[in-house]
Length: 250
Length: 316
Image (tube, rainbow over the protein chains, first blue to last red):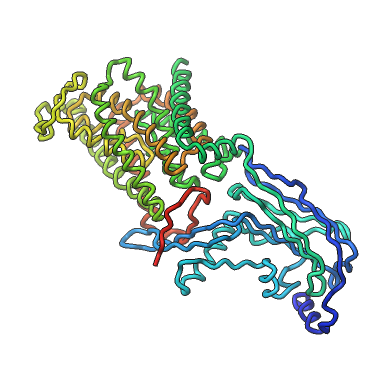
């Protein structure tokens, strides 16, 4: 518990004149800059490597780090069922506009131990999506449902593995992107913190792309829908007929 | 081994997929049905978004009907004229069905409509089949032949105007009920991802008085066209046909169906019909429960994110 309050207290004790805290350098990179969704895609491990230079030591009074990984923005809809007559059916829909289709946070310690919640929110490290087109009294129910449903699918995981410091300066962070992840540009925001202050930050990005057969099927289905449909029919008729004939002979 | 389904935007184990296809294939061969009514709920229960499950299953049923049609054709048990008139009605039905499908999807009620259709149609057909089976067994016990003589007299349908002669089916009836039946099958194909044989065959036998083997052959023939059309329409209108899902299903179901058909020769037909009736009722019951019982979570995500949902529904 002591740990939780320490940085906040330090921040309060320090005179504002000292705010331009000690600068540091941050170097980091993704282990892979392109992650591809192939036909055997079942999720992907995302690894960030990096080094901190000229920074105060880690530990209780040293530096800490937070990394947020966020996916491409999407409008995500959530339905709420209600019992109407004897049947449960979708009744109300809330849309969350421009929310990252993936969001995960990792840190070298509890993020809210390093920075107060408000600062986390300002830095985009604690997104609280608000639904549009929904009355205020229902909004919080939908917001909770959003976090819960996205978490269940691994799209907004509650907790990622903490950042590992391999040496006082060398670090490594892990994320897992589930199979349901939306392709597009993903970015990581790294913040190096010291005594409640951001002393260095860096933005990295990589793209999650469909590739190989999965990509071709997807783009064909969307761009040439009619020919795609005809191909699907031709394939089904041909394969259905051929396989039946093969198995009937024996 | 996981396989990524680009349209469903999720991945599923390939062996599980083949197992499901093969299993449903065996049952469809055993009972002489398309299997769409089993596969679509199975896909939905395994996490495939309902629109993708229905559209892809229509595609699979098209492939599953080829060998049956050829077999009945060889035995001269397909009435092409009757089939063509049905296809005419079916095309209109499929078009309407896909339109209804899109409208309900935009309104977030597609899942409900699919489940309701299944409960309604499967419940009715399953109960009727079970009743028929019970009757057959009672007749057997009484020492009578298991199937009743097909009534020879005409009913009101045969009095309708616009009559056409269908030589092979040996009927001379109005085109209207044939078109209507085709249309109904088309709508169901688009909304439920089935061929509709479960409805067409009994309707042809009992309402139109078509001989049983010609009813089956003709129904199979028209199902190829209707499910093919449904597939293309769903691909264009909803981008919901997943080739990576359809191909393994078509292959495994076709193989399974041949094995099932061989096993079927060793079972009594009344027994088979009774088992099918129980299976149909089990699917309907499962879906009915899912509508009536309180869901684990009353909130749900509208999936997949990439499916076009152009018609935003404003909730006041």
